[in-house]
Amino acid sequence: QVQLVESGGGLVQAGGSLRLSCAASGQIPYTLGWFRQAPGKEREFVATITYFGGTTSYGDSVKGRFTISKDNAKDTVYLEMDNLKPDDTALYYCAGGTIASGRDYDYGVWGQGTQVTVSS
Image 1 (cartoon, rainbow, N blue to C red):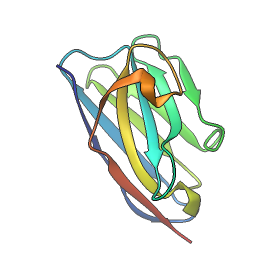
Image 2: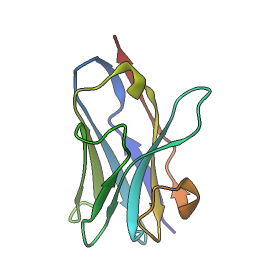
Image 3: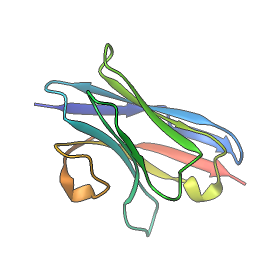
Image 4: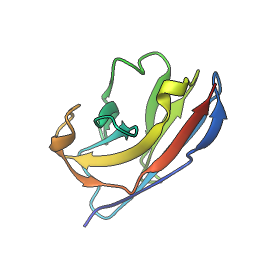
């Protein structure tokens, strides 16, 4: 059984940076992704990475600012977020799936989420 635990969220000023971590245990999924959800909004795809091949994909709103990476030795995926904007404020979730996809329904395992708040 796979478990995903996120960490690293917090409060940051606009223009600042944060790094989120997603520690996986159990059978590591083929792909690990990050999604986010702000109050009153639908869940949004942020980034995904295939765990062994390292192929990455990003949502349009974060391209050029966010970077997803992995450390296989630690079974951990990271999301480096730079040049943060107030619109990036959301609960960020790590998710595990069997295909590299930007669709949340392709992911069957989810973490509990970590809050990111960007002040203007």
